[in-house]
Length: 436
Image 1 (cartoon, rainbow, N blue to C red):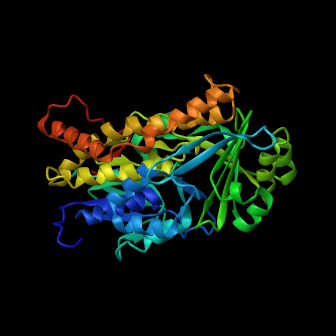
Image 2 (cartoon, helix red, strand yellow):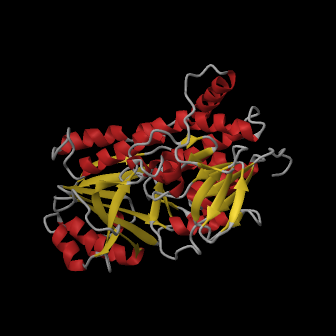
Image 3 (cartoon, rainbow, N blue to C red):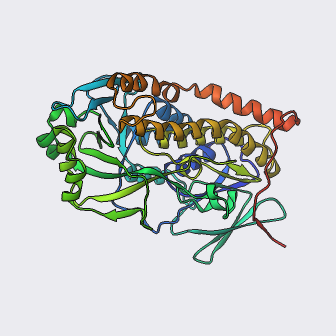
């Protein structure tokens, strides 16, 4: 864009969630041609709230200031109290007494309605670079090293490289890791949740203004509730989660009813019961994640966001990690040493080396935090003092990551690969069909 010199290759981005769109905007700003292909024929009118901390906002701003401006216009400074991220409470106590309040300097916690922000970001895409109703069926590797993308509607397009940003049920992940690889598919986390967006006026009537207008997590044996305002305080986002060792239904979402929800939370305190009483026409959502992967790339194919490292929601860090992915990948592909399509593989290798350890740690610690807040943590159990200590120390490594240093480490890895001084092996893509 502007006076930026364009690179002589094109990236196909599969998936138009917040990760895919932020990556696309970041690439275009840096002179890298890309096309975005979204499987859905239209964006759903329903959606859930997403929360963000300072690392997420800094990453998005560095990727594309215009996307960050869209976020700022859409978001709500989550708490009325300066820098407050979330208050964790004893969900068994009559008054839901605070266990600890976490402070995230520079942002507090800010939140948006996911679908509305996606629609905002789509408006920033140049004409002809964004395509709906394009569900990926296969990738065919060409002799050049690039790919032909085959879509279910019968159309085909060519690209020098592909980035999969197609969510937790990612087709690109299956192609990358191999369809016979168990890690190619999400794993059930041992939890399910109910979620809903409730008008704030209604929430305040039930929960009181102070509770409804600020972020709170109620913890209890086997369950938790998370609530925070979105859409400039007009709505309250609710997640009520329970543990359940197995998920036997072939469907990820199954019907429920208000009596069932009430029964599941009957042993919790009054405030948790008030929260779940706000759930109307509830549905039971199984919670899945991607805790392991041997690689996030092979050849000129890479995955980002939920396709790479989907996590449970218990640290509010999933989408923020997608923004960090986008930042590192943009900076690597824009590096002066990436001159031709043949150089992309080394950029993807450097991305994998830096991003995979951090993101998979986020996935694992998010699962751990779910256990802590359901009062079944291995080291915390139902001891509120131990839970407090754990929570007080849990988030800083995520929030206060030095993004400039992370990008610098990625660039240094790229230079090592360019010079042949890195001992990192370049993996071979499994089960890839090559064009004859």
